[in-house]
Length: 274
Ligand code: HPA
Image (cartoon, rainbow, N blue to C red):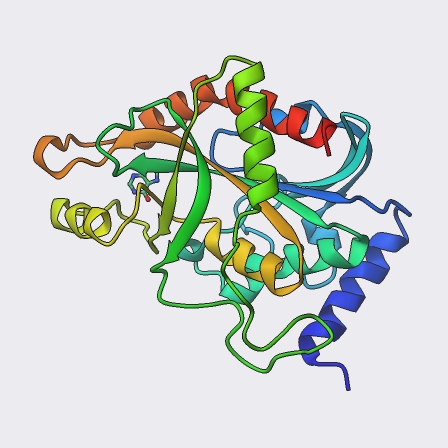
């Protein structure tokens, strides 16, 4: 018997199918100040989140949330313009619902970006970090509750949360384009406040290289459904306990905007080489 989740997914899928027959193989979710890749998509169909059954919508930004279908570097893609965060009050299931629907549409590879703070002492603002792994400290998990075996296993393996093959391809691309990149472990915190000095010290001690408030729920659900994931963090601030300065959202966005073209170039070429 179909679970409730599966029924909601099928409703959303059927609605989208009245608007487009697209079968994108690549899904894209972009972080704060990192929307440049969306501009590179040759758009075929754009659907407001508010039209799609069961899609979460932000009450203040409902005009902004859009699902974009089109082609990028010769591949069919679907991109989320506007993403959902745990700190906004959405449940893990709401945050990850679009990823579930992407899978029904045909997506096999998910590209995710985020803005993050540096914990690794050699990382600097403006750096790009390719995600090798993550630590989930959100205190919740989108897979809690009944498991639908038709979607994925009860206990999904997490030995490769970010595709080694895509990581190797991205490193080769970065070399070819002369873009220097870091690699590291992303830790997700619930936010919305930034962390204290002691929390940063703790996060570094437990093995994280960068800290942010997103990406992990979407990754878990993508892995649950057998997708492969590529994740990139843009380092927007330095979270070093001994030299910590106050950070403003404006600074974070300004740094993200500045580093964004490098990330966009890597992601676009990654799609081209798939
Ligand atoms: N913590 C600290 N710095 C950050 C974060 C975060 O979650 N996101 C972007 N910069």
